[in-house]
Image 1 (cartoon, rainbow, N blue to C red):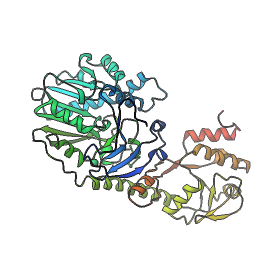
Image 2: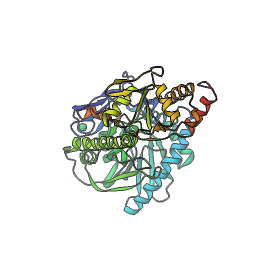
Image 3: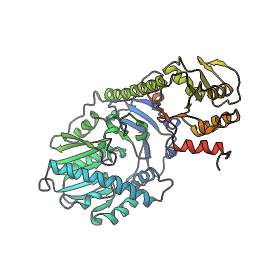
Amino acid sequence: MPPENGEILSCVCPLCRGAHFSHLTPYLDHLTQYDRMECHPESQLALCEGCGAVLRLPLVILPPEQAQRHGEAYYAGCPGVESAPLDEVLTSHVLDWQVPHYRQFHRLLSEQTTPREHPRWLDVGSAGPPTAFDDFHFTTLEPSPDAVRFGRRHFNPERIHGGVIEHYQADQPFDGVLFLGSLYCIPTPDEALASAARLLRPGGWLVIGIGGFFVETVPNTPDGEYAHLENVWMGSTMWVYYNRVNLPELCARHGFTLLRELVDPCPAHPHQTFRFWIFAKNAPPREPDFSGGAALTRGLLDGLLGEFRQRTAAALAELDRPDVALVGQRELLAEMGEIRPWSRIRHVVDGLQPRLDGVWRLDGLDYSSFERLAAGWRSGEVKVIVVAAVAGTEAMVRTLAERLMELGVDPLTLDLRMPTRRSPMGRLFGWMMGRRVAVRALIFRPHGPNTARLLREIAAGTPPGD
Ligand SMILES: [Zn+2]
């Protein structure tokens, strides 16, 4: 994006101040799940070799008078915002996400201290749910003017302020500063933590809460599977991803000592965890030691990649049966064949070339035709068809069903297996790890109601888009 109105574009790590990175990808080529990413075509994902932070580069650093743009961008990046009015987005994000998270924080805080020991708190980056607590006294700072207006209608209006911590002045020191799910949205964390230190009394607490899957790449789906880490690299305000080495070291630079870490189920997504770091401002500032940070991030990503490979290989092994046929995109079929060479499947069909006839060999795979597949289906030799497509699955199902219908197969009898994990992580991190790994986390499940509806439409002769 071009610099405008005094903003600074930076490729210096905001943690270790180094400038050596591993390029992860020009990620828009791969992470297409969220249209909003298209707002930032020049963004790059990079791993800092000095400390292991994963950054979206270049960092966009705004002058003070434009800080509200970070807040506006955040709410503009919330899921569903393209179709919903902002007030609905705020209602859902603030009341359904923020409020339960702050209730959890209140419970945990009450187990760790009392309103007598730590009475006054500054909350950085919410619409103000903690200002409604009647024991701990919270003031909220939030860059989005819309979120501030919304929060003032729902919580304690006098204590919800527009702004960012870097420019905030208070007339007396706080006993605690909280960043709950907000530190990774700040492209200048060093300045933010310096301000936290400036605003806290000696011995005051700094609490940073971050979802476990952001920092540990832990399983983040209800079924306990590793899911798409790339899902967290979304929106226009997610700038810095920390790990358990580099975050405490960054805090040490500002005189914070880690007292303890608390891990609790994530209130909005109970299958996930949320991690709280509690620091005290009780030490002289020191130079951070980031050694081990980059290795930790690489290890986490490697583990994630390994999990995807294992899952995919297991899913493919299950499918390698004589009564299974594969129909899909040649590129993906070839990738799947590399992960686990097929030995028992008899029909592999290039779904993008539905009129090709005969049998031929490409990329080590024997391709068959829709004619032979239709004959196999009619005879009962083929009982399950796997749709091997990671994008455009609906178009693939339509081609498959229409072609088979022409060849005398009733679409309503089809038993399809559809991919349920569509991760481009393998490619992403295959590059990063210095080797090409063709892997996607693929699991195939029986087709669901949407595909059943599509098959009914095709059987009834309804053209696409009707
Ligand atoms: Zn760094």
